[in-house]
Image (cartoon, rainbow, N blue to C red; front, side, top):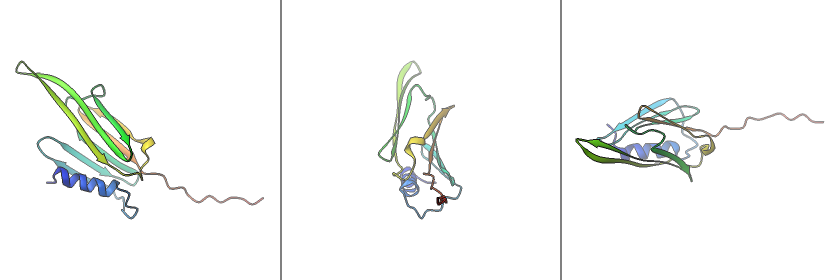
Amino acid sequence: MMYVNDFNDLFDKVFGGNPNYNFKTSVVKTSNSDENYEVNYTKDGAYLFFDAPGFNKSNLSVEMSDGKIYISGKRTYKLNGEELTKTINKEFKIGNDYNSKSVEATIEDGLLTIFVPNYKKEEKKRISLL
């Protein structure tokens, strides 16, 4: 079992901009009593799956700035007649080698999915001489 700090270290290694990292499809799972994550690495980027039960797009926010993804949310619910509040505040450092303008996030049935694409490398283009 991996712990959150191990996961963050692994996430930083993959998204930290190491140009020598070989992006093969792989899965990393980590969980503790409060947080569950799964990360799938592909040749196109990475998918981060984050369990957020009870949250939806109206009470959860995902932002990206300066090479970091910020997940935050707040919801209230009743349990045994008592009103309780659940909050999420999570930060992932992904580095500046990823296309922050094309990050996609969806939430369905309490599962937040974030896709962070790699920058597309420009291919050589032959230019005709006139």
